[in-house]
Length: 249
Ligand code: FE
Image (cartoon, rainbow, N blue to C red; front, side):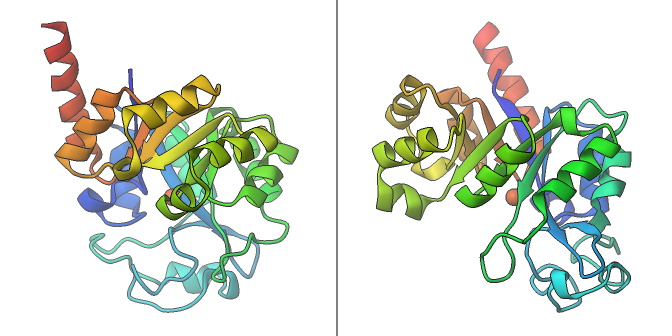
């Protein structure tokens, strides 16, 4: 069965990385919740997509240059008054959930990996009993390497449309092999059956990201990818349910 990952807690249904979205996702009939992490100035770990608060909250500022108390004051847009959560809080929320973690290691505001960060994320997950329920992802090969040095947990490399276009699929496979990466995530719009077969025949598991419309979700299900991320988890569950019903009939 193709797995569904609720992207940032279901951005198009609950706002971007909101407590409401993460709470709702924890009770859904899907497999993974996708989220992104950044360090604060005072060494907390915040669950937020961007390295800054500017685009999705009522506050501006760079997370790594702010204290947790300052970040807490930010209200996330379209969240009914919600504030950014810490990784610890997310762990507590999912302790009894059947939904597992897909944790994306983000770069800083300049696009570079944060120093001394990956092992701290792993240690928080371990302390809260969530490490064994976590798959890691990143667009950055350097971060993929850091994850591998710190844990044996699965890692998936997010390959952007521009990287896929510039390198080509064969070179992406070569890079993946050179870094012992066993799984990739490709944008749903740059995916087709031939590309999936190419990766799978190279022994690399294949998933997609950004399947937000009915058409994109249906495409991911028809391709039978391992997993896809979606900003519309409720819609994705409904389509998967009818898809499977249709297949059984
Ligand atoms: Fe992400």
